[in-house]
Image (tube, rainbow, N blue to C red; front, side):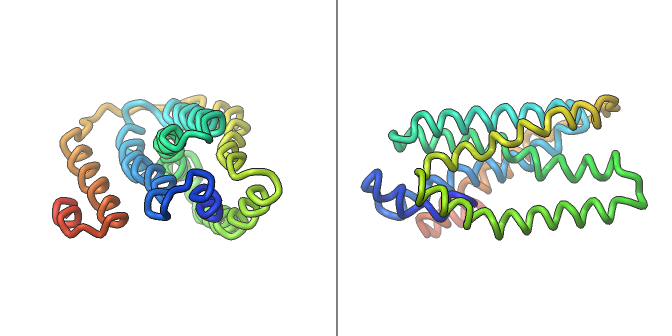
Length: 200
């Protein structure tokens, strides 16, 4: 997560303890974890293209809110919730795209390419994030997801013909899973055993 390197700066700007500042990441991870499962479940009924475009819009919307309101901690946390909900579309649906639209003989290469890109992002991201935070300001890191807009023309072309599958959406399962994720994330920030018990 590119904002990890800026947590000390954020804590200093808002005069917050590390535990409180970590909610900048926790808020993102909560909706990201839940959204990953939800997007995957909805892909058959609503279509991959529609969900990916929705995810891009939500992610960029959260980026703008976070950047404009970066002086307000509560607004920053809300923006990270929104960003997580949008960003969750990518890992959930990219794999579905490969499985459905890439020929079987090329799927291994596609998965390998995706893995390489993710690994490169995890390695280079913190370095770039640190440079931006040091030479400009950490708030500009919130605008990085706006780059995903350039993928829209490719998505429109690749996914112009989609076959939607009617099926049952397990609302109860999603709710139970969401509750478990929320309480487990709360446990990782507060270390209260009661949160861990509820999450299980």
